[in-house]
Length: 119
Length: 119
DNA sequence: TTCTCATATGAATACATGTTCAATTGAGTA
DNA sequence: TACTCAATTGAACATGTATTCATATGAGAA
Image 1 (cartoon, each protein chain N blue to C red):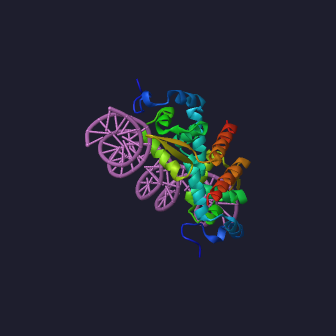
Image 2: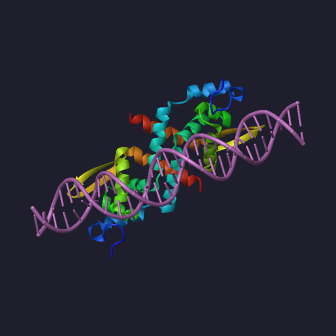
């Protein structure tokens, strides 16, 4: 009886727990959702995304705008690419990055809104 | 000339960079926004929030629903409290937690929506 | 008071992650 | 070919953070 490391069934509201459990989304799915939020949870990446929401920019421009090293920016762009939040096109030696779609803008705007409201 | 650790001004699109720089939001503000996203960027916290969006629950119920230790849940609830995403009321020995406001629900829903669309 | 039990907390551990540094790639040019 | 330079990449380092374990708190019951 009772599961390890968890409070014993005896004093849990078993019916409520089961009901909520049945309503919960898949663990794997919620993990994915949180993983998506995580991308926006770093100020460097958020700045990059916000800058790109104004105009497509090359890596070097982004480095200048954020006052950070090209390498640091490039590493973060890699993350953003892997999450399909940004795309890029090559032009000569340069790589111009831009936001993948409108969802990204919507997400940023919601975050900005909610943060403003709490001031 | 040129800033340390940043690509030299010579090959940067100086005009573009300055324009974007002027349009950027305050560093401090964007840091705060990313910090807010970060709270949703952990699956345990997201699960807690999602569970609470169904019904207010005590710590022990949450532990049972998530199949995690009471201590782990309590630590995360502390984070959620500090970010004003959840509130709680005491009833005897128990502490019933519930979502602080509708913004939390809206945020979760947006995250869920965006994640679904990418499948 | 003493005991039980739901919750909270502090320290320690383990793991994840952002940045730097150095080296590499690859496109353009001489 | 050799050279330049924007961008990428890998390894190392430092920092952050989630969970566990042990303990403390504090309310209710005996």
